[in-house]
Image (cartoon, rainbow, N blue to C red; front, side, top):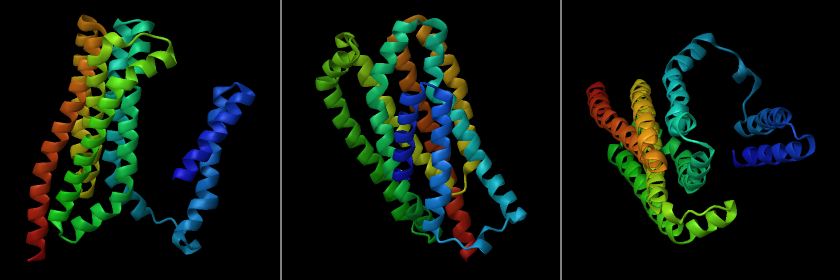
Length: 272
């Protein structure tokens, strides 16, 4: 995955410099991803030709099981960008620029969460299927604890070095926006933790709950973003972003606790 993504970004950069055309650059990146998948990733899986036969019942089952996760991912795009849409409606280009610059450190937390979570997807499934529930819960807790530590380090670095560096890099004065930066980084922690719970819900086969959680969060995001951005400006935008992620996390967490207890009980009853 790292090889494919790195190569795709390099190809995108090269074509963007040469052609100055975003559509051609994205097409080249897409083609690169497809070629790496078929020429490199498939070889790593050691799949045989007979393994590639299309079995419609299996496809139907996979689509049915994964559809809620797909919908959740789609809705999450709005949840993440709801504040930016509100700024487009009630703010101006200056506010959008400041918000995007302040949001930069949050991407680091999100990237860390992705790199941490991917290797744990298989152990998640193994712990759950083998009935090692304590290990399953402990792993979730340790990942969130690690992300909390990473966030604390980023908060300190951003508030001491981040403000002058980002200000110098983008040529703007951010000294008056320390609170906004703090809140946005905090929102990154809750979003990263939400991602962990998202995968955990998928592991215990509670995919539909993720869709419900994201839809509720999207509705909340629509109203809170418009109200706070309109009345409080950039501070309202950061408050809205943080509150959205907090709400998303706690809704997912509540669904996980309820679903975990129910599915755990059903598994134990089925084994008796």
